[in-house]
Length: 304
Image (cartoon, rainbow, N blue to C red; front, side):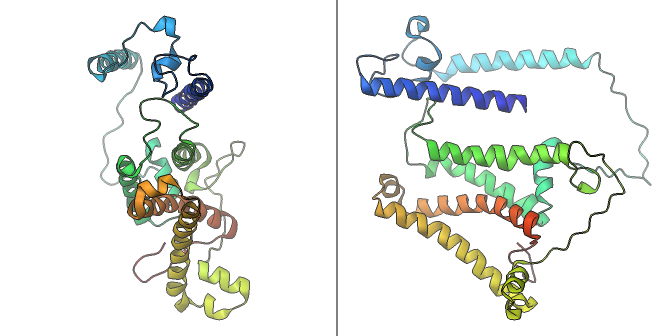
């Protein structure tokens, strides 16, 4: 957590400093930092003053960066080895085949996915969401047509991308890990930090499907009927993705956006589907917490 906070602060701080230098260069190309006056400012121009640099125009990854990474890796290995010597870590008792342990919590790096099991079925939280995350990250270099922000820190030129990644990583991943670590107690029930973890605590909640909630809200029994769950779920999900994809597309097209022209409809559609799939996670969490809605789409084979 401390490393996440530190490196987030460092990146944002460098980005703000870089944007200020860039703005100064645009206002007066004869002044500014580094050799990139009036153009993109390099990272080293932000971190070091011009008089302190003494560096060439470009610093190659090999061997300069790799050498530093190797030294840091060796230092951390030695530190962990020395640290492990005074720590008492005895082995547990012999394994009993008649009594297998059942840990209530996964390792900390999986607690985010485990907390998602409260709101999604296992095949979604344990399989589909991780696959979408990995595939989405792999596709970023091929979907992003904006060359700005490559090789230097900036916030001004990549506000939308940075905000999206910040929300996805810090809110939908780190925050879920924090919740699973500190706010989930016995039975995976919610406990505030000032509450005592009571293993015998019982919480009664009645969850309903989306069609039942809407049907009861509107007083239409046909919508609330179990037979309507399949069709209503298709309409709800289809409308969600259709509006999420078409409304921004129409707005960008009316604005004659250069980014939209560079992306084309295939890349735009892929980005829109990935983005609204990501936003579907907090929306589903919100519906479950405040309206006790369990499933959006109910089918005989799977539920969403």
